[in-house]
Image (tube, rainbow, N blue to C red):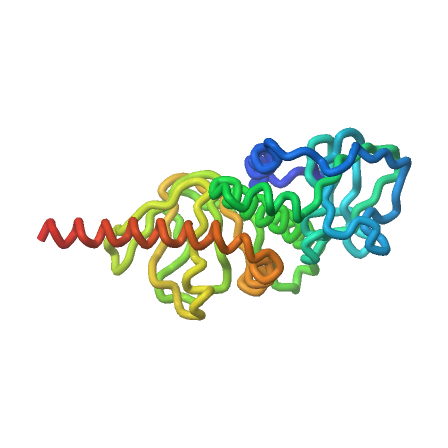
Length: 264
């Protein structure tokens, strides 16, 4: 995947991670049909031609556009149509040149990852990453008076990512780097690469209960509250990975609290 003009520096690492996540999620799963060769298409999903199907590009290039504006290109190895198949906000997929696509049913992917916690987490991060790339691309065309669309954010060491006591408007995933969690000025935990955080306050509609500060330079995906809830609604299996992530965080914090109490 690449942008038609200058590639935003903050998403370079994320695009590489998307490639890795795609390979990991599909490892051990075969396409449900032989590769499909198409000469060109004005809309890959026009008229529900491919309901519930996503494609891995075997050869060729496809365009992603929105309201007739080119957002980015998909190339060999990319997984396309995730948001379309899940009926989430998505780009228009087209191609003016021949390409070959390997088809996968969403239902087959769900069956493939259901009993594999690691693949569930990888799939949830993959969906969130594609959604954030879409939002980042849209933001580049937004009117300057519009509210900026959250997407990929970059923080320097020492920068505050979320502040205790503030409104919860996004759920975050660290794609690269490490951060520190503190409450009332006391460090209570750490967050690392691919960890999801900030979801508890979003789910409970409360203010942030802790501050998260970048320990190292961090690349972060920020998914707006309403879009994250839509994602959960249309993809309930993603909840399994998120619940496990939250449970691990709570256990870690509990152990930290007990340790602090024992030191008194």
